[in-house]
Figure 1: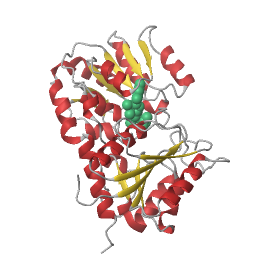
Figure 2: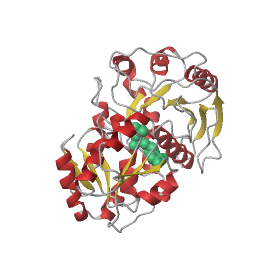
Figure 3: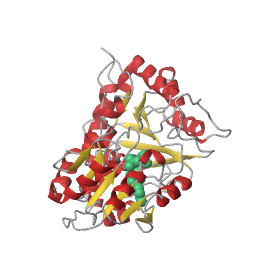
Figure 4: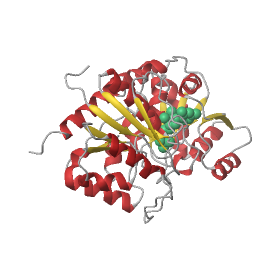
Length: 363
Ligand code: UDP
C-alpha cells in the first residue's frame, strides 16, 4: 500500500468489451494493472464497453459502461489513413463518461490508441495520461502523440523503448513495460513438448514464418489466438503441409498457460514494430523459451542465449536453426526474468510513479 492513494479513472479500449479478446494485448495489460493498482490501495473506476467483465480480484473497482459502435482499429491502417469516428461511436461515448467521472479524480488513464483523447488532453482540466499501446502506424496518430509530447511529455508512457523510438520525442521516453499476474502462470520445467505460437491471426503477426520453420523441422505447430483475418489464416494453412498447424482457438489465460507451458519453445515472428509482445512474456512466465525475430518489443524482452534466441528478422532459416538449439535454455531462467521484470506489482509501481511524477507542477 502506498502513502498517497490515487483516485483514478481508467479508460479501456473502444474495441470490444473487456474479456472478449478483441482488444488484444490491451485487455491483459488493463487487467493486471487493475489488480496491481488495487493491491496498492488506489481507488479505481473503469470506463469500458458494455458487456465488459471485471477481471478476477478487481471486485472493488467500479465499472462504468458505455455503448456504441466500435472504433476502427489502427492496426491495419495505411500511413496516410484519416481519423474516422463511426456514427454512435463507442469511443466518444466512453470519453463522455470518463470526463464526467473525472471530476474529483486525480487523473484519467487512457488505454485506447486513439487520436481524440490525445488531442483533447491540453484542452481539458482533468489530467489525462496515455499508455501508448502501439508503435507508429499512421501519420495522423504519430503527429498526435508527438504534439502531446511537445506540450507535456510526462502524460505519455510506452511499453518498450523500441516502440517509443517510432516517435520523435523531446525527451527520453517513459517506459513502463507491462505486468502479469504470475500466480496465474504455472512453471513447467519439462522442455520436451511441441512448438507453439500465440497471437491474433493477422498478417502483422507473421504466423506464416513460424509455420514455415515448423514445417522445415517436420513438426506440428500449436497455434492459439483469435482468427481476426480468416483469409490470412487460410493462406497460412495452405502454405505448409497439411497437419502442420494445430489450431487451438482463443483460450482464456488460465487454459492458455496450461497448454503453452508444455511447449518446448514459443515462436514469435512479428512483421511490425510490436509494442511489447504479451505472449512472449506469458510463455517465459511458464518457463517456455522464446525464439523470436529481433524486432520491436520482443527484441527488447528476450535475453538471447538466456531466455531464448533472437534472430535476424524475416530469416526463416535462422529461426529454424535457433529452434534446433533451444533445448540448451534453462527454463527456470525464463520464469526468473519475468518475476524480476514483468510481475504485475512491478508494473503497477512503475505506472504509479509515472502518474505521480506527471501530476507534479512543471518546474
Ligand atoms: N491471448 C489469449 N488467448 C489466446 C491467445 C492469445 O488470451 O488463445 C491473449 C494473450 O494472452 C495476449 C493477447 O492475446 O495478452 C495478445 O497480445 P499481444 O501483446 O501478444 O499482441 P496484440 O494482439 O496486442 O497485438
